[in-house]
Length: 306
Image 1 (cartoon, rainbow, N blue to C red):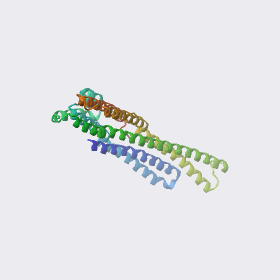
Image 2: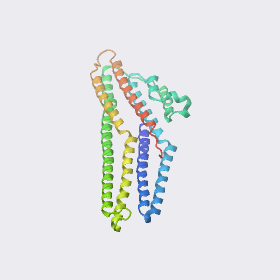
Image 3: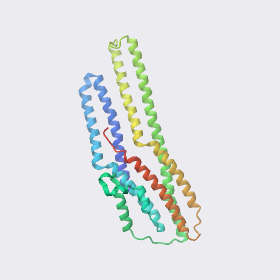
Image 4: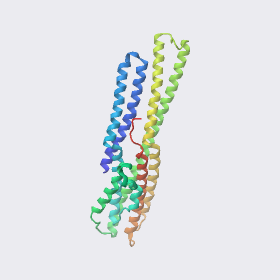
């Protein structure tokens, strides 16, 4: 499930990145066809090809359901990860945790619900089909279990969210800077164009052919740069980088606090296994809430031609 989620997530993200890039190139072709009559047939044909490519990407994404499968497999992978940790102590995720993570209230009317409504049924069936947990809960085994869980569950999640926070911050800053550079470049080109028009004395007759070509090139560039800036803004909004950065900051802090609580447990005490299981359950609940929030955020981010 984890590998499938990563694969479908990469395809989904690649599809909307390609769509924004191709849409910007389509604007470039449209401007080129207007700025140069000799380029008009080729530029128009290229624009048509780009628009058809965008339509094909959207159709493939809808047909193969990359978006829905990405969310569904990510939910399933996270549920299995938490269940595997709790099973070490004979615990299980309760139905309320599933109801808060998955859209089970829409399962009876699947045609109106999201694509991941099957995840709850599949996960519950897999839990029922699994063998009963076995093993010892003595102190040596609990020490090994604590070390294993701290590494594979808490520390792994803390490192993941710390890395995601940094990547989201860097990508968001790069996109903001790109949009700002495109805006100021457009502003500069427009000012230069106005200056050249003023120096030429007549905006209908720009003087020499060389001056006219320069003014046309400046106008075309000033028309293309806003499209590039819009692509930067669109990618930033589609990826929800600021929200992901905020989510990861909270989760990294929560995982650090959980690691301190787990390390402070006295595993020599009676029923120490239940105390450790309760801490793991709390960590699992926090992680499931984060996954549910992430899923709700991206359910509405389907790829569209508009």
